[in-house]
Length: 112
Image (cartoon, rainbow, N blue to C red; front, side, top):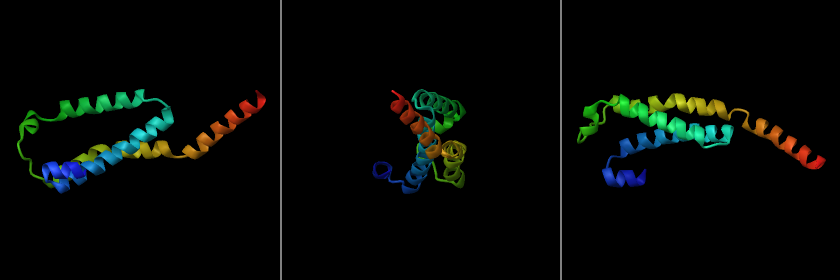
């Protein structure tokens, strides 16, 4: 975020980007913990990038200095919010689930 502010000089936009990145990071972490693989993350990221690429109007890519309107403030967080909620739901009972898994591994090691 600091580098983004130093390069662009736009603190509010950098803060919005940091919040949106944190929210999508929570979903990525939860998906990684639950699946134990990076492949679902790669697929989700590719679909996310594709949807943004297809969904953005051509004029948005060529706009030189966009103004920070209320829509520009709320839109990134609104787009990522469902993924954030999904990540939080995946994180429920992680200790319980992985605790049970470690007990099974311990029993298997004792039997061996």
